[in-house]
Image 1 (cartoon, rainbow, N blue to C red):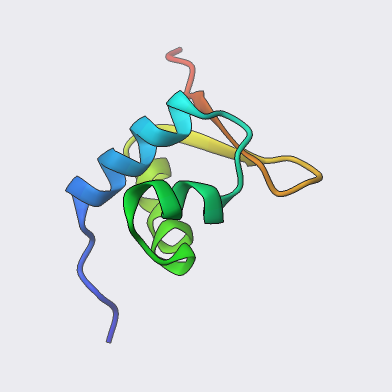
Image 2 (cartoon, rainbow, N blue to C red; image 1 turned 135 degrees about the horizontal axis):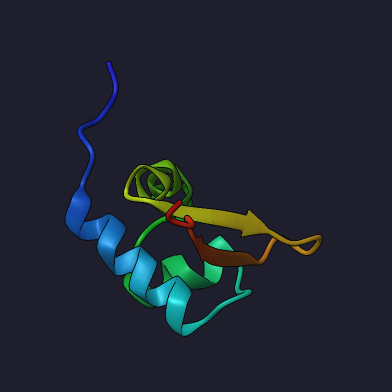
Length: 69
């Protein structure tokens, strides 16, 4: 059984990635007092909210907004 989506946590993760672009999930997790796995499990929720995430060669996270047509 999957865990329910925590939208508040996803929003906090989004704001933190936006503030610290290119940082790894472990860094984001430490800032928020979460486990790294909680951050990585929340990433699909951000995409569902209309955000694209990109991970660079070093594991850093970057946000991109979907373009409106």
